[in-house]
Length: 284
Ligand code: KIV
Image 1: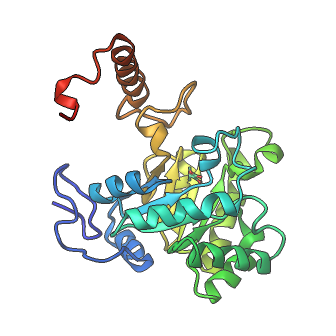
Image 2: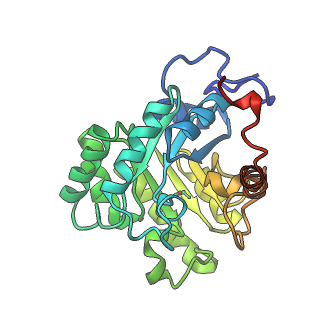
């Protein structure tokens, strides 16, 4: 069984042939009306994009988290359009049914709506993105309007916005107590400006539930509890590849780091001992 936007519900069914086309923003909004919850996952290369596409993920996010998991920086701040556009193009080439959403990196859209438009156009033309994501609340409403009027679908991102980590004083829960109202107001301002979905990052469950109930477009939670319309995760976190302390919301569904460590070490040992390559893996 699949949901009508193609997400597997019984673990083995994929798109079921129901969707031989890319998922659109209207599909996602319609899914909210039907009460269907869906997953979004990050992807930064063609191979992982193909796997997640085959698994039935309706949306792939080329996140600026690439700064950390691909480029090795310690925050998302240094990554540029030049870094992310080729990854976006690879994800689009590697997938055939998912919508590909690209993060606009820090410094590529905050200066003015015009700057945002120029950056977003590069992601759409050179990266073949189907939509872009920007961080920020009401103060980004004019930018969202400029992009959507130019025909570019925009996903919002509020709560913990990692590009503002230095202003926030660290990766902390946002919107506890009275400050929660500002996040609700941000969500409404973004919807009014035209976003088709909003990421809610690391905010209390009740606040995320309230926003989800109040707005007509899907909310996509990460560390925002179970009552959002969708969930998003960085795939290296999900599949146990990221070293060190994990955020509270990260649950491992595989242990790729230890699998890769053990299997690559085994091959290295066989090379050193002369066990690899044996005759079966050599040409006569
Ligand atoms: O960059 C990213 O991966 C993100 C998600 C975690 C929402 O913005």
